[in-house]
Length: 122
Image (cartoon, rainbow, N blue to C red; front, side):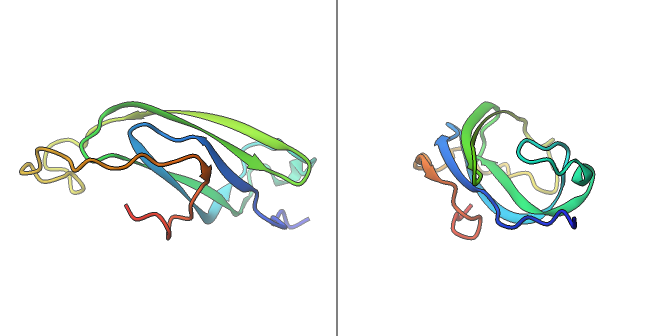
């Protein structure tokens, strides 16, 4: 009745992004819809859940995407995400310094369990 999760689903990265990395962390999230179960009274409520975080490669702008799966006790749900990465305007507080011209190549993230954000160094 309190809409709290018993256990968070395991997340598996089936197709990593080509121009960035993702990780997962436990956060307060607002339920927008229910895929598994009949807890419709929880729609619109804020609960503890899993949030995926995407960070593009340094200097990258353009499209990206990923596919992942959430393993619930009775079903495996596959999810595809398409992203559009845009640059910060010049002199934005989080913009990279203009002296950065060539990003350092990053190894691609591999398929498998989505790492916790604490494990993935951005």
